[in-house]
Image 1: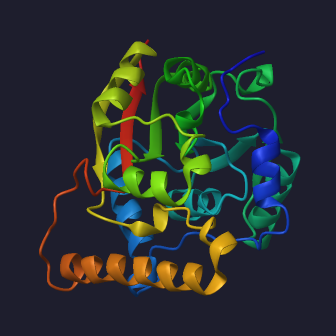
Image 2: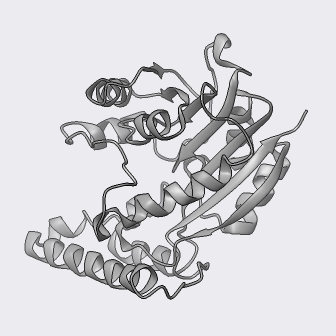
Length: 269
């Protein structure tokens, strides 16, 4: 089946091989290094405010090495499952769940050919950086929605490479940018509607976070250069977060500088 996968299983397997496992996302950890997680926690609290999450079923699609599955179980009481098409990614997701003493399943399967018993049983389907890797975004989202119960929620997060960050990526790591379909807020919302979903909200997320940039190509030029640019990107991000969090000066997310776009939608029927 040709699904228009711009990345491929081999791409992800190479990326995950030998990489250290992350811990779970924990919004209670203080400090700027955890600012992004705290903001995502606020978003999830709002998205889930309308229903009882404890005992509800949540599926993360593209769950390789997921630091979020234990978070959703611990913070909201979801029964969690993860689906990914790479063996190594599924193995690592299971290991993280085990490390965090969280019950859950990691299923190695193709999004477009899922196990029949998984269809139509989940209250929430969530993905982080998946939909933008397929040329036909609508087809991808429609396939994701098949896992949802009628009335279930779909939460879709993708990197925002339609503004300034995309221009930087084009300069420093064009091959990685090329495995993404560039979708702005309006295009992502429209794709959800065309996939048969009711969009509840769709917007840019955070004012800035240069951590979304993949700077690894700079290592081929100079490791010291890579280290210096990575530190600079981190310092700039944290400086902006200080303004937002410590000085309580809200900076509006926007197409030019925001690192992510998030969409919350409901399955009709």
